[in-house]
Length: 214
Image (cartoon, rainbow, N blue to C red; front, side, top):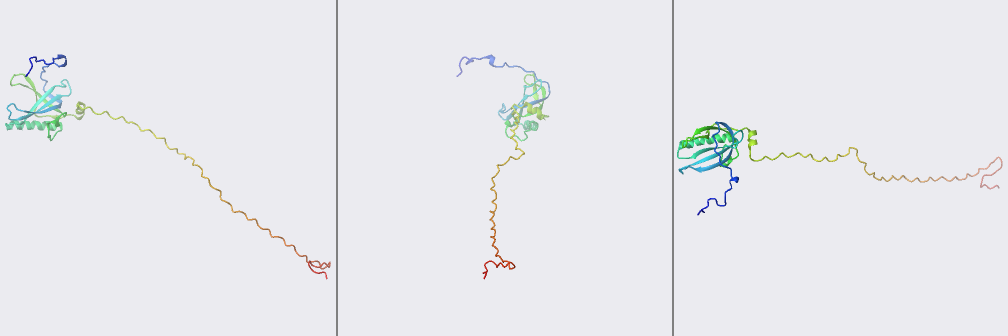
């Protein structure tokens, strides 16, 4: 049960952007990003369509929204055929060639053709995304348009230089070498001189030593 006061809790217009009526943008090619994909049921409840939300990513009309609805499940076979052809064009331009889930298209960039048509119910002019002719976007432009901030390049830090080993070999501690022992000199025994026995002098009549004079 709702309360009588529709402004439950109050309303502050300063916190809400006012609605703006946008005139259709000129027909042409625009670089866009797929910002949302939604599966919805048809009004009759007999089918489903896939709605793409495109956001223009550069130029005078940046941030303007464009929409495309593809009747992928519908009793009308011709409508399904047209929708599958449009989906194939989006797949090839965005690089999602074999999607399994609509969310795979989110944040993908491509170039789409836009035309200006008249609404059947009000007669006002509106924009409509062409069903064919989508093109892959330049890789550099797609990188600039990405909403996911790229990681800043890591700064190269030069490793600290280790002190170079000296080319002059350091003097190793001298190892004590015990001097070789010289062979002890054995004193030579001087042969004792044996006193020579006097042979005597027969001319002077001196007898040899030890001889008896008689």
